[in-house]
Length: 384
Ligand code: SF4
Image (cartoon, rainbow, N blue to C red; front, side, top):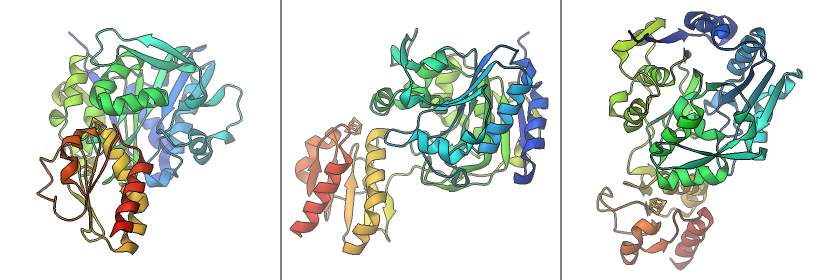
């Protein structure tokens, strides 16, 4: 009979992270169950951006440090802690903010994958990406420990362990993910770097406008499992979402990444229902800013257009408010725009090309460049 996957759930107060982490490890059988002396171990945190961990955007440094201590105790020969921040964000800045440079040990090394040498790997049975590049340091590690943050996401609607592995990719491959299919990409990358241990950091976590601009959720949770899918499913439920409604979970199950049925998972530690905290979700079509004066409709847009558009609107919001101008931004298709074609509309992306004449101005590209959206809006304001 197949052994049940075990998931440990531990509620942790911020002044008791060392004891909370130790309990988490005990519940799954200890780090020794995975790491043996002479192993090279890669710890993969979430260093998506160079913001402070208190925002909930990146992995809590104390969780990384506790993990390093447990891996060291198991006798690992070398410990890498590596990631590559979002395109346009500085991994070095994220490492600096994490304070991990303070660790003075010849056996521990922080890595910015943006500077790594990449090796191309073929992906058998790929859903979309038949070849992806992996950093050399990932290739030479025998063990991968994934430490994502518990966050909401504007497309998925959560980002946890499986999505966190996207951070091993080069910026070039990351860009392809957002226009070729994020969910398929998540499955394909995990086919070649499926973590041996997943530790989900929900000590703070992020709700609302995740994965970067939401608010701290203060969920006070750590979840761990050797089964990456079981850990993911437990975390999704702890956040108050339904994992059965998420396409990538079904894809991961079909790919054989682990167990998705809660009834078949051995849940240990604190009761999942008693630690559950309903996270405010991130994505909804028709986001408004400044009392509804700025509106964003992006039905069926892929994550590339969404991230460019949301990035621009956030950066420009202050300036647009000063101008006291009403604008509607459109991306994807027009099916969910609530007939907002009246007034000044800015259509972006090749998906709206056929509707360009219906927009006040149109910005081409797939995805369009943020600077071109900025220029189009400035021109529109000048012309008023
Ligand atoms: S134009 Fe935007 S929504 Fe359309 S395919 Fe390109 S990136 Fe995706």
